[in-house]
Image (cartoon, rainbow, N blue to C red):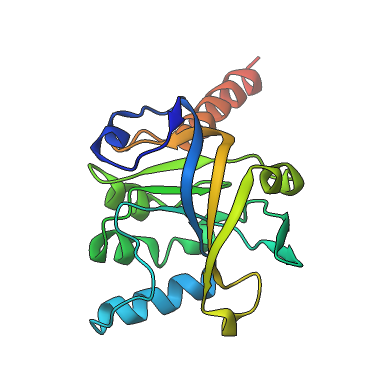
Length: 186
């Protein structure tokens, strides 16, 4: 599926679906999430909008106004902040690697999906970025700043956590544990 509009249809995506994103995405890592939560909690206006947005957990490398690498970072590090952002903004899609905490999965129900992008594919991800549209919070450094990118056919991304709370990471873990338990009794 090509995801080119952020609206309620996203809530119909199911764990296991493959998605390619075309349109605008924001990058945000730990420091940007922390600052955003602080601002949302103190009722300050963010310089960008999370509403109906796609946030990519990524610390891009930029050289001469060109994205050189834009691989995903481990999303679990954003777990302390994501529920507060989901509560304070209409964030609908997060992209990263490795999944997120149970608390985030609960906060996502009926509101958002999590897309897994393959780790180790930073140059490939960068090749899908058509334009740098803006940057915020440069004082945090290149990797931690919030970048706004225009992407085309960004993926493949797999819906790893859907808006109903189905979590492929947990399913794989349960299946591995069952297989291990069966094998250990042979």
